[in-house]
View 1 (cartoon, helix red, strand yellow):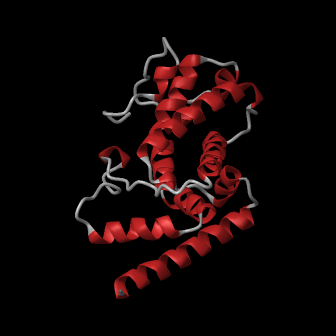
View 2 (cartoon, one colour; view 1 turned 60 degrees about the vertical axis):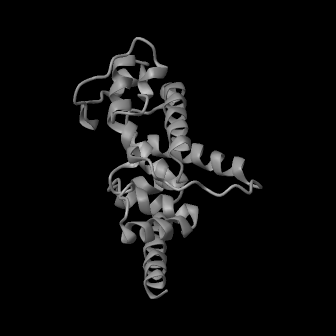
View 3 (cartoon, helix red, strand yellow; view 1 turned 180 degrees about the horizontal axis):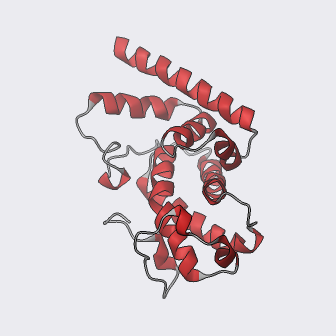
Length: 197
């Protein structure tokens, strides 16, 4: 976990941070039986990935932290329904996407603008101060429709196959491909537009 942010494991008292866990180290059989040590591996492997994805979607590091924590709480509660053949990353990102959708719905009707992402916790690429190209890219990403942006970020940043993007977004694989295609096309248009203005 990065320093400066509270570990998502802090909501599970008595569970220690495992060292160097990776996705292949996670044993689904133990996880389904609510094994806290196994779940701590899940948090370590996916905590930062979920946070960064949610930070890019929300453009609000505090909301991303809350949504990341909420994702793990919901995942813990749903472990009993996890099937052994489930792709863990797609399952977690689907839970995170649902939380994000609820967050967006809760903001409807509010007039406050989304805060700019300036927190270094969001990753060096997001916090590159003084980088005009980075600022233009972030502005263009922010102008994409939310469902397109979510699919694009999963595909590009998480390097997820389209099948997993589809599972995470709750759509068909064809729709996931279409959203990523449209997002890339629109992003190029927006970047071209910002370069000519």
